[in-house]
Length: 377
View 1 (cartoon, one colour):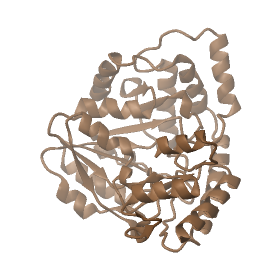
View 2 (cartoon, one colour):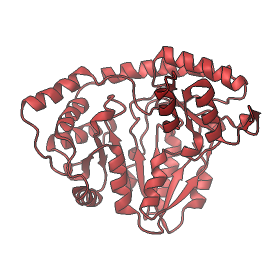
View 3 (tube, one colour):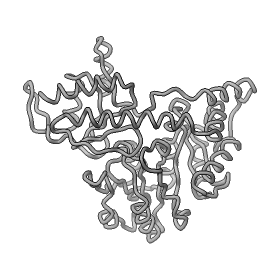
């Protein structure tokens, strides 16, 4: 899909890209100023593999301030993006034949990381009609002695759904009964929530030794290109991840780390301003896309994605081409509406497509108009 979009653009086509998973806002000025100051202060040398002490402390302070969690420097680690944190953890925990529980829909890299580590992906269904709520009965039935990891994001990519406190409590109870399982809680969208407050499974202290929190500065601070992620978890696991990372990339970029110190230690006014804008865009897109017959919408609670069910279009033929699945539909939309989306099959749910609303209001209105016209056909 990305290749086709680039090809169309190279031929002068006006493609609107709604497949991006990054904020369209600029990094706040005070964070950029901190990076400039770090350069001027000569903070340009190699960094410790697990992160500079100042950033580790900022992470510990943030976890205490927001979630009342007590972590020490030996229990946190910095990587080149949250993705590297996830890969470090899975490489250290998952061996050949181990099972990894992944609720649907899931971020595309979860399954690839498990596969790369020799693990077996075990997918847990969710209920679209209930806001993509995890089927907790199915989850319990899928746990075996070989289950080593459960990984999920909340708010979720691609659906923007959020787990409730009650759902998290039941998951924590299941995990506690199975001490061989480590939960990886991907909380990269924690600040991008709308009506409700973000709830973390870390509130259940009884599973602290079975939990790794993964986060970063990319989404909440519009710092995707700075490539700073972090994790908090059991000291023994953090030590193993540190050893592994030392043979791959060593420490993350020094200037980006100092900028991240400023991000985590400052107030969230710029972040809250982004959230207000995202909420307005979400509501606008729900209204505009709600006019399209056959597109079933769920109201996301966070992030900046819609994940509508579009299977009503499958089995239909237009221009001699039959639409069989989400890949076909996304291809048709790109070719005929010049709007780039992501097929739901990439996230384990082929009846859906992902639409990002991290774009300007003008682009979103035009994209919705094009989608309506193309799908009406």
